[in-house]
Image 1 (tube, rainbow, N blue to C red):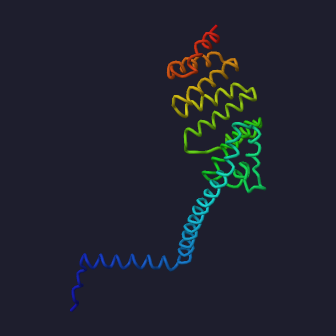
Image 2: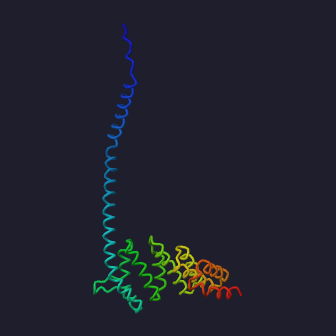
Image 3: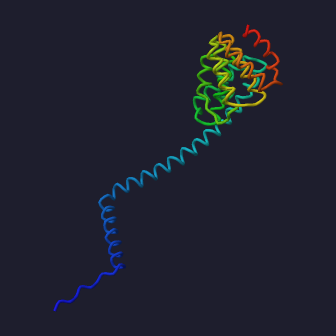
Length: 234
């Protein structure tokens, strides 16, 4: 007489399913073990490379900061002697002082290196090398809006010196839009309006002079705004 088949319980079905799934996963791993090892090794390499990169970047930034501190004394002295800008650009190797150009070339990807780039652009501008200054101002990158606006205004100064007034005006206007304070913004607006006037864009000049008067009525630039508005509106 045939015995009745044992009824499989839900628990047994679940356990059987887990065993089957485990077997499949184990089989898949065995077949692809070398690829898992490759992936794991790759992850380890990436993690180690990232740690090394971060540590090297930090070390390089510290080196750049030290070198920038040395050359900055020369750069700062240029406010009373413009010839110092050239020395700041090239440095004084005989005294162990790296120039701003070398600093940017070697550490330009660090925070201190980027700050050196800003000073290098200023030094180029003050020595009349406007094309090199433009390049450095344009490549400058910083999270500080005040410095970024100053670099954009530096581009405007270069274009104005090159008598490319419309480009200069556009840069000054962009700098004014980057920040809003009672010291820098009215200066940038005034420069933008002045350059638009020189470019023959009188309506744009008048618009900015009116904005200057309205938003910064106590600024020194607002005092002369009416004169320019009358001049360009005639």
